[in-house]
Image 1: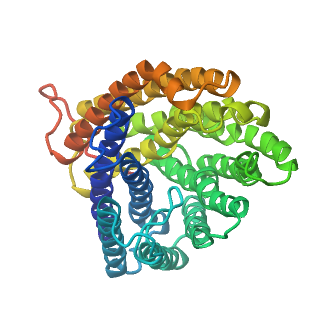
Image 2: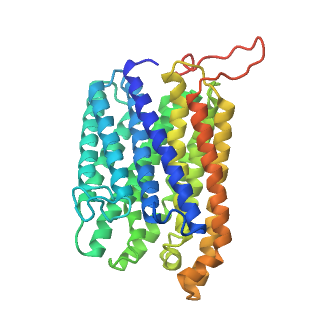
Image 3: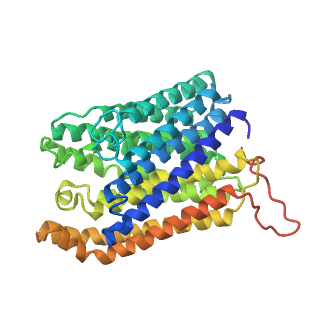
Length: 459
């Protein structure tokens, strides 16, 4: 570890991984409710479980992004973080807000109160005071990181990361815009949800992936940055107007059907570019980095993001197809693999790389770490296929033949059981990852074999 303030990332990564465990537990419970509808219905209704599942996903991913920034920005800027104190205050605000959200959701307190009670908008259910806290934490973070970069070396990786994080914070302000007109409400709502995950988050993903490729492969920075600029340009070009694929059926003008279809079809390009970028960098790489698990997560991130966000997104993005499939299990299939590939795997990749360095150890428990990758990824891919088949049956029976919703649920019950089994595999993979990351057991090596430390080859 070159800079003392990189240690800040350890606290962020730890909190993020705690929330990750909460998130997958909530997902497993939600999957069980699909097949045993009355399970925990009196104690923890499905709508609360789902809110905890989706909200913890968003919060832990963002916390992971913050941690990644605090880890890589000092190396990119070649200076310490501007104010470590502010970084820890920011984390304290996030922890307080998270605890407040869980208590509010589970006990359903202050119902109907905008400031203290939960909101009714999906993904944005946080009480008003928590939303204000998120804005405060984001402002602290942006000031801290921006001051660090402005006073230090300027690199494409740091600059694009900052642009992405500024965009993340600014777009969240639309969470406070809640007009009475439902079509207008949904239009602003997608400014947050879509322009995050298919806009500025892609910038964050590209910059962190570029940093990992730089460190793990030893390819020249100039080559990495050229790829990075191309990926970012295509992501913004396709992603901004690609928002239109959410406007098909919410009351907006019909021209959005064509704008959304054309530009969201192009959203495959940046994800294909990121996958090609990762594999080309490894192919051209001159460095035999000891942290093979981090390399596996990086390549897995790029590959699964291409299939989950790119291919599965394209499957039902054209308005003629989406007319039948929107809101079915096909949407769930796309959403699960896209989030896992693009952002979950990305966070786990940077954590796998950074944690041995932050703890001043050789890369450890790599076999278990890589086993966790295959368990999580295999479970998520199987879940995606199962949900795709379920969604196809659901689309035909419900949207074409006109059968009622509950009858269709009985028809796809077998797929839901398989989905639950896939969820069990994912949770086991998460537990294995946590063990591999936090337990400092070294790899078993043959006598006489020398293993270079992570610090020796961090550059």
